[in-house]
Image (cartoon, rainbow, N blue to C red):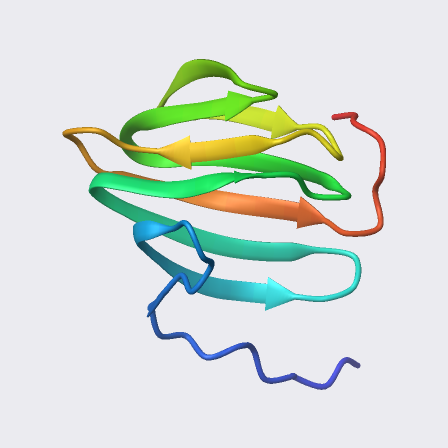
Length: 114
């Protein structure tokens, strides 16, 4: 039988990344194989463009916003998912609306797939 383990603090915190504005985060799981985090964007919020060495799935749970991969922008709406490939600059932001996303990061996965 498994023993329950503590999870990261369940409180929302302001994303401390330089270049971010108006984005709150809540980490749900942080393991070497999988990172799950909720990101809450208010109006006119942004995460700066940056690459990651691994695959990331972004699932929009509520609202709408925008994302870009390698400088190509597109809209993202509730009930949509996008996958960012490794080592490609990506960005996520809102304009007049708000958005709640689930970030699913695979630190061990260096290629895209389903």
